[in-house]
Length: 579
Image 1 (cartoon, rainbow, N blue to C red):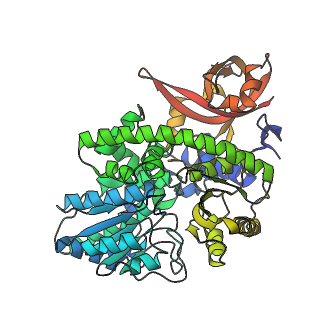
Image 2: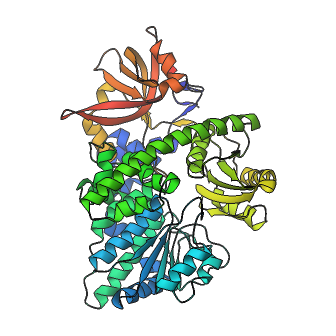
Image 3: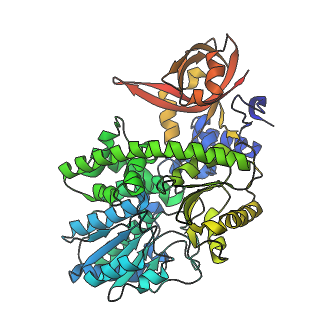
């Protein structure tokens, strides 16, 4: 049964609430803990047992951090890394060009700097070299270095690692592994075929952090104090959120603690980046995913691939400012390129049909640096896995994004193994591929077939999931702060949305080209302000602007809006339905 009877809202979505079991669990939790019922509903929806509710609201990293040695190859990886440090051997870091790769590299560089050591940073050019290690780069690095550490890449790089003659190679990765591993001295990856999968939710920055935990443990065994790892959790948090890793288990504790570290503004690169992004409040997961992450990524997408990692790793304030400003400029340029490709991709996808198991588009000259973002936009618009491919010289380089419950990385890996792709791989929610233009249609047809077997294409427009009802008078700053204790929210742990039933609209005004500001109440209690970003890009803005006194059910997320030192609750309005 639809929540509040809303089968089709103004934006065409069905509203759903908690299950009967979740409602009963929330009631029992509220009685047992004296916590507010709205908070208990969120905890019940997240699957938190009644007897663990209080502990869940205060996650301790020491309680949730796994033993790094539970991952295969971890001890030899840390031992070889330390041996290079002690012997003053030449170390190179080969990192992916995205935020996860950049934060992973910066973690290693920061740790080494604290030990009085340096490393060579190498990040491949997205267009000229593509993803992951390549033979010429690895051979060149091996000629000048004793140890190469591949971060956020390398698990499938058999040939390139073989080409690193004369140097040892350590792989610290999280992408789906194949049946065989490359000939590295250690491959640490929770998504190796022979792993249990208990830590499959870690991103590369999380894997690197665990390797440094193990390195510090080994140092302590020798009576040596290693660098302060807690101060590096800002990097782990950024990598985890930007790579859309699920905020469950240890990831939640890493991000929560990392946000506290970031709020201290001690890392020059993140301070400079926060300032150019005009962040004026304490950082949260939104800031990491939508303000900082895209700017760090901008260098790898359309500029110099190493800009983001260099920014995160620098301890020079002046260099940090210069790099942050350059990345901000590139991010603006990236948005313009993305908008043009998105319009063409959506038109092409619509012509193919948006109800298929896979939504895809390919075009000549599409910048490979934005295809992943455009794939995300197609996925969000259709609630389908999406792949977007840029074609150049008879070859296509593409990126895909998936929906919950559909493992895109495994499907792409299989299509590559069957010979329809030149190469491909990734993880459940995101993957990359390279395909010959003459095999494009066949490859996408096969990929769609595999995804259909996983259930892709059965869902309609995404339902709007709501945690319950709220009245304007109950939406207090105190309640929002209590609910935020159940966070941080993000992938794998979505934040709560609430419905405000039968509301009267007192004020509705368009802001800029597409946003809407609304003031509403139930007619008896206080009024609440709401903001709806992009409301006029769809039917929501026009419908509420022309309300003519009609009453509506309003739905969205409640947040604290601070202005001139005053804090008040604001609804981030996402949907509405006639009452």
